[in-house]
Structure formats: C-alpha cells, structure tokens
Amino acid sequence: MPHEDTEVLIAGGAVVGLSAALFLARAGVRVTLVERKPSTLRHPRARVINPRTVEIYRSVGLEETIVAAQSLTSDLSTKTVIRARTLDDAELFSTPMRNEAPGLSEATPCDWCSIDQNRLEEIVADHAVKLGADVRYSTELASFEEDGDGVTATLRDPDTGRERRIRARYLIAADGSRSSVRRRLGIGVTGPGVLQNIVSLVFKADLSGPLRGRDLGLGYFDQPEPGTRMMPLDGSRWVFVTPYDPATNSAEDFDDDWCVGVIRAAVGVPDLRVDNIEVQIERTGAKVLGYEVAAQLAERYRQGRVFLAGDAAHAMPPTGALGAATGVQDAHNLAWKLAAVLSGDAGPALLDTYEQERRAVAGHTIDYAMKTMRDRTSTADGDEKPVSYAAIILGYRYDSAAVLPEETGGPPALDPDLLGAPGTRAPHYVIVRDGVPLSTLDLFGGGAVLLTGPEGGGWHPAAARAGVDVRMIGGPELADPEGGWPRAYGVSASGAVLVRPDGFVAWRAPALPTVAKSDAGRDAGRDAEAALRSVVARILDRG
Picture 1 (cartoon, rainbow, N blue to C red):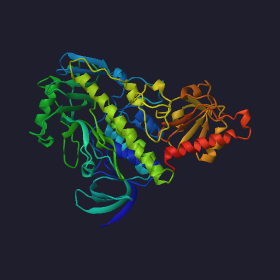
Picture 2: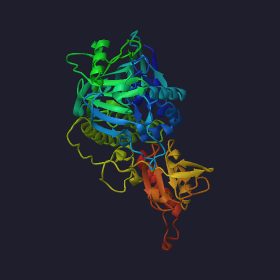
Picture 3: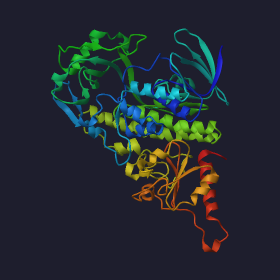
Picture 4: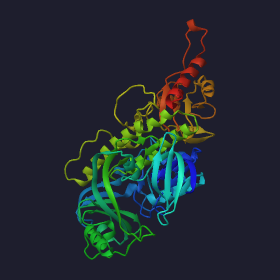
C-alpha cells in the first residue's frame, strides 16, 4: 500500500476542516485534508458569519475577499424575520433582522457578512491550497490507529476503492455531528441530542405576491410542518427547509412533485409555479439533502493525538447563526497550539487547553441557541438569557492553563465593553500607523505579542530576551492620538499585556516593576524579564 506522511491530518472538508487547514498552513504546518465528497457542496447551508468570525478571517488576510463575495441578499439592515402559518398569512411574530444582528462597530472593526457557506468554503479552500495545504476531495478516512507518537490512517477513494496509508503527528476530526472518528474513539455526547430531522433544497419561484412588499430575511412557518423555514438565496432563488421522519422516509425518496407540494404549502399558494428544484450534488444528482438538527456536546474533545472540532465536538440549532462560527473558532484555537507544539516552541500540555477552553464555550453557546430557538418557534414567553447576543459573539471567556487569570469565576461571556482581562479577546482599539488608522486586532495572528503603553519601554529589552514580539502603543511606530489605550486594556501607561496568537489576552501587568530606593542593587528590567519569562513558560508549558 502506498505510504506518505504529514504533520496534521484533517478528516472533513466543510468550513471547519478547511479553516483548520488554512490556519495550520499559514503557520507553516504540513497539513493534509481529506473529504469523501468530490467537491464542496453547492447548497448554501449557513448564510451569515458573525463579526468575530470575520475578525478571524481578517487575521489571515481574507476579510476583503470574503466581503466581496457576499450574497445579493447581504443588506441585513432592511430585512425582516417573521413567523407565520404560511408566507401568505399574517405574521405571528415579526422583527427587523438588524435586531437579530446587533451593530458592534464600537467593539470590532468587522461587520456581519452574509455569504453562503459553499462560497465561503471555496474561498477558504483556495487560500489554504495556495499556502501549501494538501486538500483532497473524493478521499475518505477509512480507518486509523493512534499511538504515542502519532496516527496511522488508511485513506480510500470511494469510487475506486484504492487505498493509501498516511502517517500524521495529529488528527483533527471535523467530520460532522455524526462523526465516525468520534464513534470509533468511543467518545459519548451529552445534551438533548437530535431535535429534528430536516430536508433542505433550493428552488426558484416568483414569491412577490405572498411577500406583499416585505423584504424577508428569514421566515418560520407552521405549514407543511412546524419548523419549516425559508430564506432568500438571490433574486428569485430560495432555500427551503422542512422537518421529516427518517423512520418512514429518506431524503432520497422525495421527488420533484413532493418538493413542489411542500413549497406550495409553506408559501400558502396552492397553484404556485415552481420553476426549478436545483441539483445539489452533481455526482449523484441529489436535489434534496437530509440533515439532523441537534443539541449535543462531546464528553471530551481529545483522545491522545486525535482532536474533535466543529459539529464533531458540538452541535446546536441554527438559530443565532452560531454553529459554523463556533466551529471556525475551534479551528483557530487549536491551530496555533498545534503549530507551537510541532515547532518545539511549546510543550505538549498546551494542547490540553484546547478542550479546557473550547468545550466550555460550546456548552453555553448551545444553551443560548436552544433558548433562541424556543423564542422563535413558540408562542410562549421566551426564556430570559443570562448574557447578551453580543457577549456570546465577542465576549466568551477562556479559563485554562494558557491564561493567567486575575480572578476566578464570573460569567461565561462578557459584554464587549468589559473585555481586556486575561481570558478574554483583546479589545478593539483604533491606533495609527504611518498616518493610517488600524485596529489593535491587526497586530495579532502570528506569534504572541506583548503590547506596552507609552511609558513601558522597560518591557522591550525584557521581551527581546524572552523571545516575545513587542509593540508600544503611543510610541513613534503606533500612535495613539486619543491616549486611551491603557484604559481600554486595563493597565497604566507603563503596563503591558501579553496577547496570544489567537488574539486572546493571556496576562497583563498593570505597570512596569519598580525598584525601591532601599533596593538600589536590583534591576527593574531584570524583574520585568523574569516576570515575562515565567509567564511565557507557564502558558506554553515550557517546563
């Protein structure tokens, strides 16, 4: 059997697996991704990515490309979310979509982006390949064995049955909510499990009559079954979703006549002309795709050298557009840690912090998505949510060995104006370089960065000796016209903040260490260096 090797093998070529390949390749890691389908799906699936996800893609240079490819229905500010018996009936619930996508311009340089998942996947895959990732479609992970040094996997061409063997240092399972890797590892899941089985399709029809001038962004309908949804794709093309019972039917059983019938029932126009039901998978000719809507959390995210990411680790209802975003953030968190360990810059215990950080975030994000789903699909009063949507998107907190907290406990997520403490995403603050405004977030994405205030020059030689990149905010390179950076980051003008490659604060020092007059023999710079070396060693498990 042909044999090859790589550093990281990824199973699953949807947005999470492709994003992991992109982030790893950008960090110089040799990565191979396998996906059993012949290409990315044509179905749009997730339609919106939130500002935090856009921030992550911005950090790898893809924001402009992604925004330029957003769909024709991208102006969320004019659209409406409704619930009704049918599209042609009066609304039981209606709200502007802008209320569902809060403006966060004070907290982030990025905006919401309405882009179909299939188009996003094409962009991410293309960029990953350009950076050196080996992305293989029509290739499935047939089996694998994990040992103390790595993973040996068998890859198979599903059309020909030909097999190859590949050796990897680590394996990432991004193979969906019914992950075969997770099952092979014997990792269970907690939570309600499957909430609903749905079929989804794309059709073309003129709905201007039942729309009655409304600019619909998302509709929830009770016909033909409660839980039916429709959303615009572009022009006269629509995405349609409705529940079904897999015990009596499979998605492959539904022909064009069935599709037209359920579309007419949801629209409320018995003789509606449906012009086209689109093919989603060219190889099979499939027009109707079956999915599970689930709420579940893997009992653990890691077993040895195998990691779960995305839906393999957690599944949640689509309400709130949080599922794909949470998965991309998994990939971002794991990639820099794998890169650091593979390069020898960090010890292996750093990888334990992936589960410590991301599993907690997924848990409270699932809870939020479940509450949002009940709010939208029930006539009863909605549950009070413990944190805001903005906090869920931008304010999730990490508690792990890769963070040196200033205090323990507290809510799982904070409103964006409260960020800055260790364990939170570094705040967005506008600075100026060469006369051009930029965000402090644009300083992150490579290695760890130590930010200092305008009086923090004493940290710079300490950072150089500790092997940490350092930037002064308010100095000659990065101007701070408003003089507000210390306040935004919770330190003094001589303080320092250590920011991880994923843009999260790992540690902060309110001020540069000082030497009392009675300790004239001590060196404040050496104290700063000792503190910084100790912090970096603890965070990166350098022993």
